[in-house]
Length: 190
Image (cartoon, rainbow, N blue to C red; front, side, top):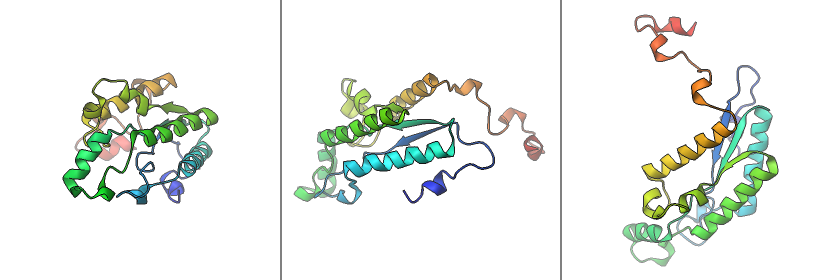
């Protein structure tokens, strides 16, 4: 939270971001007493941290589209295989996350988005709606595969379009590469 002002400074001059996506929760939902317990953030604190982020983003810009993305599901069998490949059979090194707990954090993310009137992409549910999601969307039971990333991208684009943002009609921040003279590139930025 201490980095919010540095990552998203209040915009005084220039244009604020048109949209911002906040994608947290997978690490926060780590279980206590397991190998990644240092990542654990209690669910109430997680929700309040998200609330503080959304409030800060709203302070940055009244027009910015804010999008919360739920944590993804957890393939517990995949996490167990991954953990055993690293640590053997030490029970403290067993899977440090469960899908049930990821769902609790996802639910809080969805609830907060509704409370605060911002958009939400429920990746936790969307991924599980696909047969074979465990191996299709998650490489080690937690981290996204290319297909998992493609699903997130598709849902984010769909949500942004629903909010009226379409890349093909938005202004560019910088000149298109075809407008930049290779001999004098600085001219395109004047």
